[in-house]
Length: 314
Image (cartoon, rainbow, N blue to C red):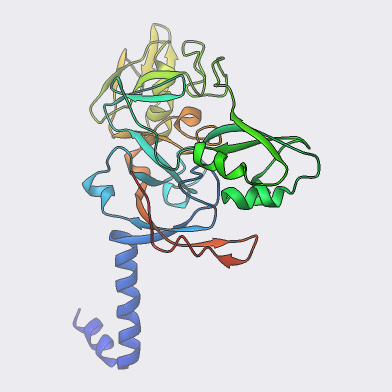
């Protein structure tokens, strides 16, 4: 230790100051604050592609609240360590122990409806005249042009009443209206089981696992917890002669080790979230986003002047 201290004193004052600054920056990044750049439209119109988020790190240890905009590691990327998985941004609607349900597109938690978030959007059908400038349509709602897809006369866009009203003033836009809700069971939704014939707008109810929960290992319920037990918590599930084996021993229940969260994108029909791949384990959390530091419009190659230090409403 003394030798290390002598080497440290042997460094020049500028070198010591530089090393101290790097250590302080690393400490702030790990424990206090980091930044993340939004790249998708799954949280439109709360967030825009190019938004730079200030992410608070301490909620990973102190806890998050329902409604928080959460940054976390992709829980589906099993081919790499957790710290190297892609960062995702969604909104927390289900805390550990909550029961979450979507009924006719409305989110209910523990039987009570959650009000829509200010920037929440849904799928709208926009009818336009031939030759209408899609650049003008995109600019009116703040959506990057590359994210607009559709035919010559019909566009499917993530909108809410306020954004739809903006399009009324765009030349060539004939009318806008919300599209129908998804009610038919979809095979691509979690837990991918015939016992849970859910759709993206009629989903659940299901309980969000909490640490210490004892869950049944029966055919109807196992799809909800199989991935948690085998991929995230390291158990081995096998079929034995007399039933299911958990880590080599007969078992009818298993205990969940970690808290989990249920997340949704604010762009409800344009988001791959917990409805598609399940729960977020607590050890995948990175932090809570509360503000947009600044926002870069890649298509126009300029900063968005109205999104400096932009607060994220809850």
